[in-house]
Amino acid sequence: GHPAYPSAEMILSTFREIHPHCEVAGEVLAEISDLVCALTAQQRAQWASLHADDWWWVMQSQGPHHYSTRDEISSQVRRLERVLSCLGGPPSLVTIARSMDMYMPEEAADVAEWEVLLMVRRLWPQEGISMPPKRMEDCADHHIEQLLRGVTFFPTSRPLPGQAPGPLLPRPWPLQTPPRRSGASEAVSKCVKPSAPPPPMRP
Image (tube, rainbow, N blue to C red; front, side):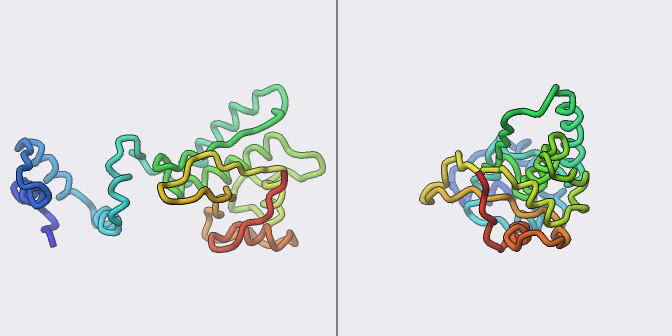
């Protein structure tokens, strides 16, 4: 139990519990003290929930410095959609790469992936398939089936140490409310639930 609002001297004492000969400049200790004392209750709860392995990720300089909201991500996808709409025709292949290895929080990755899939289908709809909605909130389960049609997931990143590479699956549906049911296959309905098995992927 360390104090919630530590002084610079208290922080140095904590550091020396880890390394007895630790020396830190006084102005740096003062800045750390100011930072810790200014944490909100929510931020303190987030830090308290971290496990030992989490700290390695937190201390990496290339980690995220801004956690985008769902509305911010959706807005950026709309901007990208305006750019891609200027292309002369549909591309032969679309590659979507995930950057989740500490760079993007999982919740943001869920929103970004489904928003991009929606954008691709809006820009270049497949023959015989209706135009998908502009908002995820308006999606039904048959839209999910259409979004995943022709999508193949390839795992390309190396697994964490001690873990074997697993199959790459669709990200969980990012909204608390799943898409409304409209008669699509049961497998497609399950794919939007984080705890359910994934649907079969089509080549």
